[in-house]
Length: 330
Image (cartoon, rainbow, N blue to C red; front, side):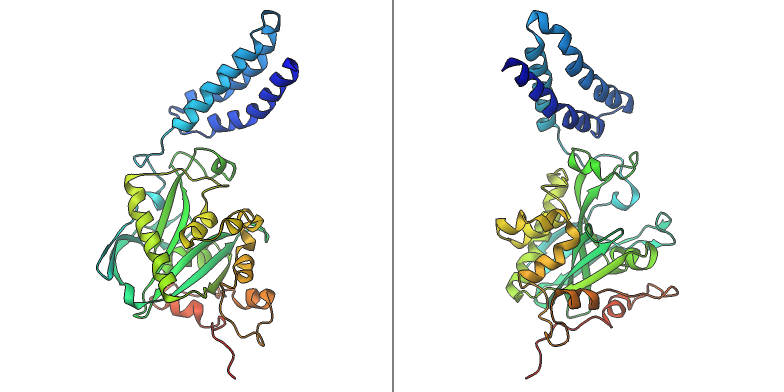
């Protein structure tokens, strides 16, 4: 029993422990890398303590020390961030008006060459008349980045994306998102930035769906984002690929039932729109023209020509050929 207990402890802790240390934000990098090598070395070399009976206590203390450090490792806002995450938005409500400071509106020459720009704006809650679900695919069908864009009757759009806040010293890593490596960040941006970089610069496959939700739900959802954007400035949180990511954040903001938050399509985010369709949250689209999700999905892709220009009419242009969310005429 003792033998299998220590083997189980070693096996269960070794890879996650190495990952937690390697992808941590410990500085300097030499210390981070040294700790990520020291932890498995202690766990493995403890086997030589078997004659003294200390193998299991040493491993338990090592894992316990790592666990205590990990759960007390605080997220921070005062790091040296990559340019697109350097300036966070802030948002607050005064009566029926929401004020947003630092709406991002980068102008991209290439994916990595851009002109940084932000502006301040106000949004009238009484004019909030649409919420669009955006899914962007860069490889395959299983994984997509998912975010929302809020539309107002005066022509304004505000896109909000829950993302990893990456430090300038680190390249992007999918695996790192499972550990304390990225703080969570709300990219609050003009559609010309947040959607435009995906359609016109990265040339990803981008789909836009109208959400079928009541006006009071739209407003509650928008204000939920506003509150989260404001709170995170003072209380940063860790991003986590499994529990606190772009899709789970939307579901939490929308108050979705737990069974949907744990749906397999939350992890395989390329299927999020299909899940929304099954929840009767898309459209409503004319079932004669769009019989089933596959038809809605195909029709909802944003198509942009190679010589298209991201101009002031970008929001209207990307919606011009998308299916209108309306019930069929009798």
